[in-house]
Length: 295
Image (tube, rainbow, N blue to C red):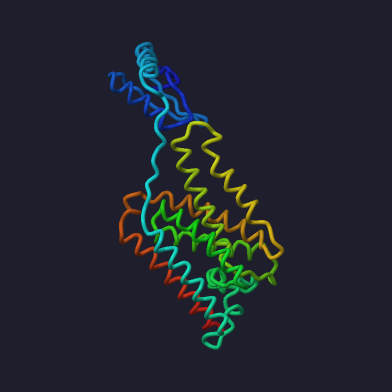
C-alpha cells in the first residue's frame, strides 16, 4: 500500500507499542493495515475502502477496553551480587598492595592515568588508574556508589556483561579525559567507571522507554535524571575531577547504546556472562602486569 496515495491514516502515536496494539485490533477484525514511521511518529494506515470500518473498530476497542496497558516489565538477570563482590575485592586488594609497595613498586607511579604517558601509548593506565585510590574515604565512596550502580546494571545485562561494559566505559572515559587535559594531568580512582555505570544505565533506560513510553517527557526522563544526578554528585569537592566524571558518563552511555543491541537470548547464556567476566579480570591483570613491567 502506498500510504501517501492510497492509504488513510486511522491512528497515530509516538509509541510504537501502541501502534502495534491498534494494528492487532484491526488484524483481528480482518482489516489489513500497515505501520509507517514519519517525523518521530508511528502511523497506522488502511485502504481507503476500509477506513470507516477501521475507525469504528478502533472506537469500539477504546470504549470496551482500557487504552493504557500495564507497564512493560523489564527482564532482570542474575550475577549482580557476584559482580559486586569481585569489584570490592579488586579495589580493596589493590589498595592493600599499593600501600605495602608490593613487588617493590610504586603502584601509583606505575598505574596513575597521567595524560601525557597515556596518550603516548601506555594504554594500561586507562585501566589501572580505575583501581587506585588516594585514601579510605576516596575508596569507600567509590565502593558504595559503584556497587549500587553496578548491581543495577547487572540486573539488565547480567553480571559479567555489565561489569565488562563498566570497565570499558571507565577506561574510555579516562582516555578521553587524558586527551582533553594537558600532558601533566594525573588521575586515579574508580569514579570514572562509576559514572560510566551511571551513563550505561541511562542509555539502557532511554532505550527501553523510547520503545514503550508514550510521551516525550517520559521517554527522555532517564536522560534528564542522569544529567541531574551527574550534576549533583559529579562536580562537588575540591579533588573532584569533573571532566573525568563527564567523560566517564558519556562513554558509559555509548557503551550502553552498543551493549543494548545484544539480543536477550545471548545475554541469558551462561557462557556469555562467564566469558565477559573472565575477560574483564584478564584485562585488569594484563594492565597491571604491563604497568609493573614498563621501563
